[in-house]
Image (cartoon, rainbow, N blue to C red; front, side, top):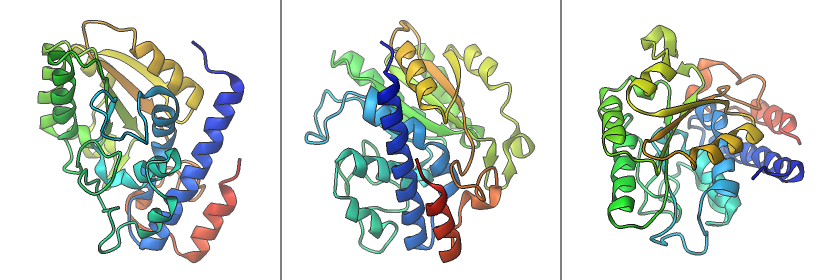
Length: 275
């Protein structure tokens, strides 16, 4: 069922507010990873505000859909989405990466409601997602599992071992999403270790593959709806995104992989992030 234009605009408005929160989190912490957090905001908003079977009032419901942020360093985006979705007070975001705060530099499932798995060791998320998806099938629970990975992250060998398992066990309740912003900490992914042609590689590993503009909420939701109709195999969405999306001086700049804006840069970002 197509989502109405009004609903899409509401979600786009939420995405702008989430991006403001991401920038503020990193600015107040004086550290973090804004580039890759901003690139995946539209994906997370589409999932948590439209597609996933979740209830912030019952974060531990055993039948809820699960989400794994394999690229755990982008957790500023996940925290912001969870806060805006009502899992915890937005004021907590101001403690991002501070000593004693539950909002650690990588997600910790024991510290915050809404975190389905601690993550951050790159390359491991899909393995965890496989286990969750398989358990859902074995226990006839019916929940779906979504796993977001970075395109630099999939240079890890464990990712491809996990991809074989996804197909082998016919995990059609699993959706892999690649945040393909083409940049990583050391530069362009094609220069560090080229992962393309990614669509053909994932297809050869047994995935039904879709490609989408990952910063277009309408397109993201449409493909997420298609994924739910695929049977007998896992699905992968290659989401083409812009690192630092929404903040002009961060967009497509590798140096914003892991640094915080100063006061002037922070104010400029907030001024730009308007709906």
